Image 1 (cartoon, one colour):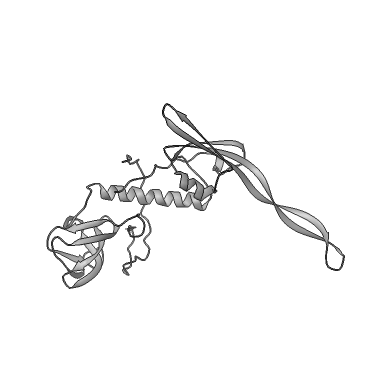
Image 2: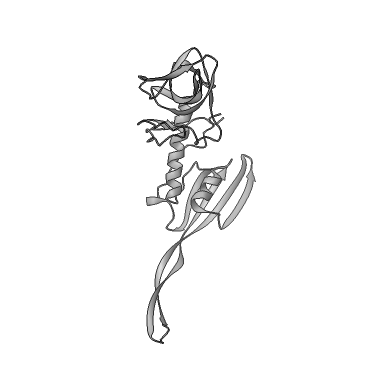
Length: 230
């Protein structure tokens, strides 16, 4: 399992949960974010609540009940499961639930924060040290060239990208009446080249080999490597 890098954690603004209950400020949404659901166990006779302030009861939960984790905050965990009166989704005290991993919250916060950073990079077509091969492809597409080599420390892969932008160009032609007209077309022009090196599936080095590339100000960003929650 990969070690977790130190992160400055910021609350992820909550969205409407799949459970139908509105999420609350400071909540980190878990459902639909991870590749598979997280199951928890109810430790003792407990109450499940409508909101994380734990003021209005939704129902009672029997000991040994298995529930699915939907969201977390610093006060309580939002879960879905079967209460004594039927299926519910609501908030429970953290102490009333047994986690499969004592470091689960730390890992979930780090996983969600990394996901937020990576999604911002991809949206801006930028890359950083620590991204995976698939994340680089999602941001920049498939490379123009690929190469690999095997050293005493393992296999290294290199992706080479040609960076283009569309440049307006005036073209003179004739319309249907034979009159001279000027049109604007956009031509793809290479503005830079980028070399990305990978080891064990993650970016270890980024080089600008020519011109302007997706490295704002020439500063290479670093993000934590993939975080294993399970």
